[in-house]
Image 1 (cartoon, rainbow, N blue to C red):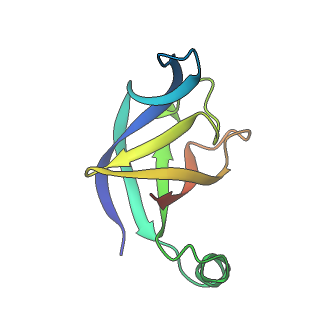
Image 2: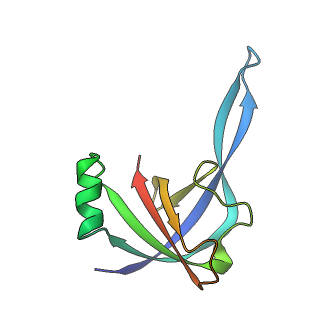
Length: 106
């Protein structure tokens, strides 16, 4: 089942603690929008189950909502107070109108 939900991209920034060590902090960006959300199925489901990542969600996002420097290391997705790390991005380099992002809930 596919549903439309509002998502927010979180970007990593580094703060220094009292000892001068870098500490990652995730801050909300201004990039928000609706995403088509569905659970993975078929081959992707079995691939996720093999890696013990059954809580994998597939986000389909309009390209206009994607930040310019978007990557799977410095960004996360927040949807309904759940934060997802980004496992895979497809369609980012191509000229598709929609980008598919596979996320795993933390």
